[in-house]
Amino acid sequence: MRTLKINWLRAGLVLSFFLLIGAFWVVKAMEKKTVKVTSQKELVVFHYASEDTSPGAFADPDNWVEGTSPSTRPCGNGENKPCEKTAIDKDDLESMLVGKSNQNILDDSSFSKRD
Image (cartoon, rainbow, N blue to C red; front, side, top):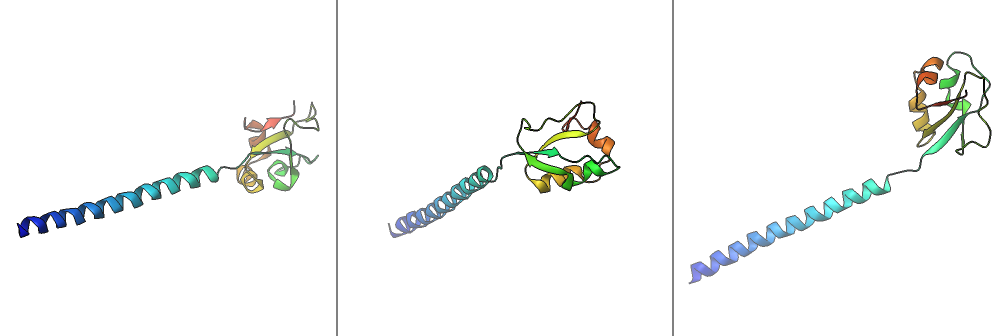
């Protein structure tokens, strides 16, 4: 009888240990989901606000300003320049522009162009 009691006690301790580990695992999984939801940011629209069309000018983040969409300032027409680009922030915009030529930016369909 004593052996049976000790075996039940051991089984209970092992079961309690695994239930406790499972509870921690579930809590940790819920924390990860919360982080994903809170890390989403709103997108910002940037407008090309320079008259500069020299090589590399379109890839210069200083030539882009934060604005609204649709733009309150018209993109114009008949000009071969970019108009708008949506990004998370200025750093995200810069990462999209780095290493691109003016023609690469004009050919990229994610940049709206002035017609």
